[in-house]
Image (tube, rainbow, N blue to C red):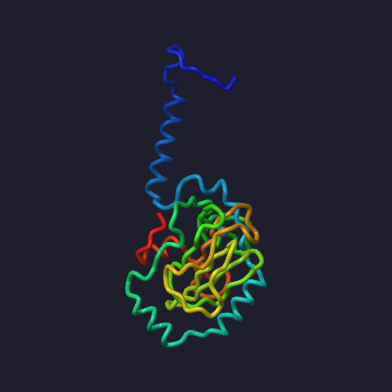
Length: 218
Ligand SMILES: [Zn+2]
């Protein structure tokens, strides 16, 4: 009963059809001008509930204090050259929740970007630095946080496996673990969050952060 076959009798164009088409064209134009993410994202923005988690934040603060930045860390960062950033995944992914979409997170918006890949997909560090957290972290599930030489922090959440240890000095492209859906996630995806400072709510757009450093997510 869902079938509808066009017949010449119905092919006439009404004023409503024209207005409808104009709306579609306008919407299409606005989307392409806005660049950025694939269009279907927002329907799925509840797949990730990585939000403020006291356990995660206190473990992060401890790790940060335990492994302070050394002059060598900074030198290593500078020596790595301008192409020292890379993508966190080396296979196709789907963006299931964009950065900054409004929703039920404590910050009022999604503080990271969700990249859906099958469970077990290798996850790599987008930039080098010091691993200040590598453990079970409540809403973030198994998570790794890397403090980068520019003072930003990269958080990788919902991992099924962690392959680095706290305190490790790593490079961009180092394998951190495998993707999963641990913590508050309804499906397997990588939650990648970039913070300008250590605390929750200092997040910046991972897409822009990486794009400015030569690594484009799409
Ligand atoms: Zn997320």
